[in-house]
Length: 402
Image (cartoon, rainbow, N blue to C red; front, side, top):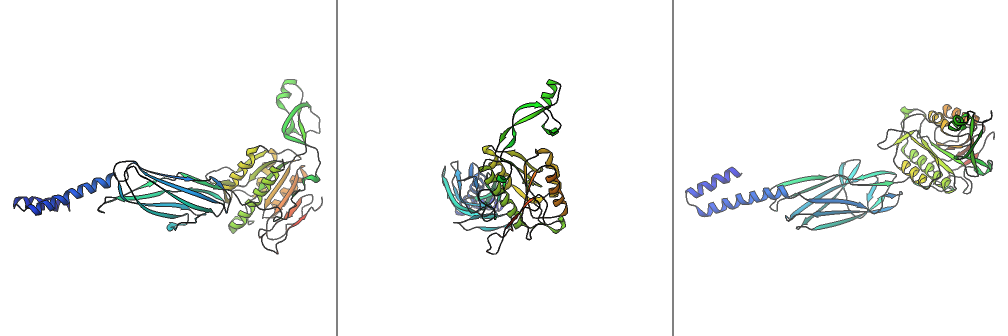
């Protein structure tokens, strides 16, 4: 087009056609201005997202604030924004369009910006499910005022929202509110493995894991740690993400979410009761290759760490639950309470629970399968089907052989 206009301009000048020459020159100048405008349109354009809350629970509402600032003298006649909203979060007060991916939908906005002008858009979002959600990227499109040329750019994701697991009531789980795991029926005076108050001479009845090797080296005789007496308990919550006995059977996503919610509920209640709580899972959080292994603790940050870990947890297990129970045993002191939350009652799981009981641990099995679990001598068992909202759902608590 430009070469043709140049030829036309030259011919108009040769044949002294002033009107035609003026028209060709005007069009050429307009094209040049449009090309420069298109080149600089999205330069120094600032795009920011901000969330009213960075942590939420399913059903909560948060406000997403989008700020677009034109930090230059050149105005934008028209600006189109397409911003990705992750699935699992619903925009309440604005329409969205399909993005072509199951992972996100798009918010579309159009506006014009004068020099050094800023626009702010706010959206109400509803958190639909547990997870970690990143907002973006956003694509911006603009061009010249004549509509001749277009340019676009992409703004990376700069905001994330963490949605914790849904917390259930103990009544929904069929557990008593005061003592859901029956801990009060255990010995009232325990030793706290998290607090060492001294050492003493070793006796044959002391476990080797209690030997204080540094003190032994100094004194030349075996020394054993002395722990502070306490009435609180040490709980290891073990989450088995398997929903079927064999991997080729796949997974049940709804059941996985129920298992995670049950684990979060027990963690919240137990830490509020003053117990030291740890978390062990046969799966890994998003963007993490390591299994979840949080040692028991009762610090103010322990519950937040457990809830954040559960929120980021993927729905896939990477090793059998029975193997996880074997791997975590050396990290716990005898007398600790191991609570297994799972939905698979395989022979290896039952054998692992029985072995833990024989090693001196107090074992609680919170079973979330569709059928009651088999009895295991000495293991306190609670059956909590996942469809706890249905009137005909039942919950049974019993302790066979103990």
